[in-house]
Structures are given as C-alpha cells and as structure tokens.
Image (cartoon, rainbow, N blue to C red):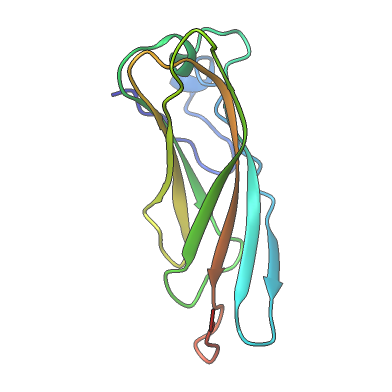
Length: 144
C-alpha cells in the first residue's frame, strides 16, 4: 500500500518534495461557539491533485491512500465528532470509481484525513470539507 503523510503546514521532507507536490490541504479553520456549549470547527481544502497525471492515485494500481493530519487551532475538551464530505472529485470515466474517506487518530487536538482508493480506480484530484462538533471547556456540555 502506498501511503503519504504530510502535516497541515504543508512541509514535505526534501526526499519527497518533488514527488508529492500534489498532496495539499488548506488548514484555515472557522470556529463557532454556541450558547449551549457546542463548538463547531469548519475546514477543508484539496487533499491531492495530480496535475501532470503521473501521480500514484491516478496511474497506480491496488490499494493507495493519502493521509493528511489536521491540528485544531484550539483544543477541544474531549474527543469530538468529525464529519467529512467530498466536495470535489475528478476521476477517469474508463475505470470504476472506488474511494473511501475517513477520519482516523481523532483526539481533542486534531485528527487525520485518510483518502483511500483501490484496484484500477484512477482519481485525478479530491477535495474535502470537514466539521468538528465538541466542547472547548470542561464546564460546557454540548447537547446535540
């Protein structure tokens, strides 16, 4: 399985910098706190884009994934709920479209976006939006 990890500041090790230019995400976050103690954090951006069509999500076979760690701009009281949505997906019409997107390593400090594909699927680019629901302080209770 091909795995790629980058941090939310978009820095890559020198050895990977030329090969992984396509793995990006905008980590701008919007935080809203409701009177009942619920805190909502919104973010998102492009997970990867294979502009030259030679990236492993486009021309690879078998299991492939991209991992993007997200660190919250503010710590939550406890492990929050994470909701992920695809808001852009560009793929080949000549192959079946297979993908999975999930949040792993969820903590009060952040989580990791994991985008997976497999078999002969060809994915050119993908973007996600995410929403976090939780509480910022111990004296707040989020009652959804």
